[in-house]
Amino acid sequence: MPREQIVAAALAILDEEGADALSLRALAQRLESSTATLYRHFDSRADLLAQVVDRIFGEIDVDPDKAATWQDACTALATAMFEVLRKHRNAAPLIGEHVPVGPNAMLHRERALAFLLAAGFSPALAARAYTTLARHVLGFAMQLGQDAAAQRREDADVSAHLHRLDPDRFPATLAVADALPVPLEDEFEFGLRLIIIGLEAARTSEARD
Image (cartoon, rainbow, N blue to C red; front, top):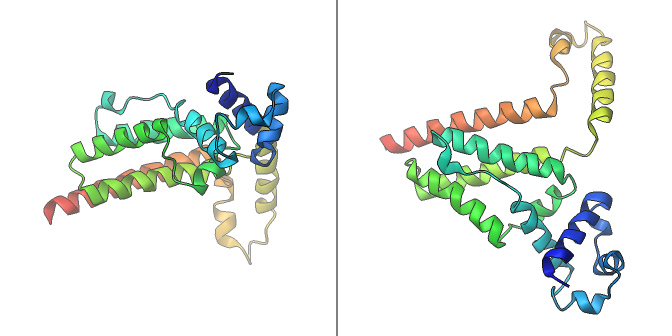
């Protein structure tokens, strides 16, 4: 059985049932195979999960070299990664547990670091810039548990609660209640813009020093 077929089935279990359900035994049942067959391809469950994570990185389809500026490249890479993790909502915690070092993850990291270095970032600042962007994406991706309809219902309930607050105890919250809660996607984009503004300031400061 081709390894790609096995990894695709493992990813399907992850998407449908979550990481806790993804075991070699469950995967063997899904494939109508045996765990012994799977052990020919994977040393352990951890090895299987690592390859599933790398399969997900392989879905990030963006070429930072086509961006006009490093800011645009950062935005494109972060947004593409977030959209892939939106599709695979159970994957973000797995990525956060260990630094991905599979071939697709390495290529993604290499491209990001290359354009940061080419933009004049020092090696140390380029490394911090990449990890900050990646953790921003992961942090928001981990909050993508609910479907869109459920999230809208919850947001409506929160908004109604905020508008009923006592104005004497919570005047500041009431003053901004029409703008709360902020949709997750808007928070992600706003935070990403702030990070890029901060990186530009750090790069400029570094160049002066």
